[in-house]
Amino acid sequence: MRLADVMQEIADVAGQVPGLHTYGWPVDESTPPAAWPTYPVEMDPLAAFQQGTVRWQGGLWVAVGKVWDRATRDQLSDFTADDGPQSIVARFLPHDWQACSYVAPVRWTFDALTISGVEMMAALLSLDIAGPGLQEG
Image 1 (tube, rainbow, N blue to C red):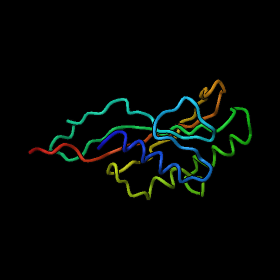
Image 2: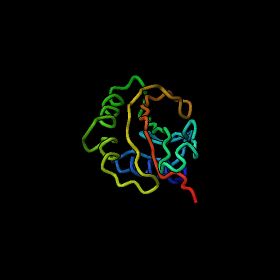
Image 3: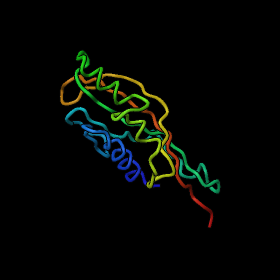
């Protein structure tokens, strides 16, 4: 399982949502609404030695617009919904992952981020990621 490939596939799947600009790496400038994957805090490739699976925690930031804007609330509601045409989770669940075994949405958390000097409302989708581990021999 290669980090860059997993991060890009996460962005590509999120990019299926109409109107969402996605990047396969964290960005310091973007045009909202935008999404990009986080780097994992840690990866332990030997944790699952001979067990066949390595797991790590990742995330996907989704930045929408100004914190105080009603349209921001409405758009973020659509992106974080369980289903619907703009639901990110609805894209992740049925996807046939190629860069890893699976990417499972865990929870949404909300925060304000400063992007290009502007405070934006954003949501972080925590992800449980798993893929093949090292095999003996």
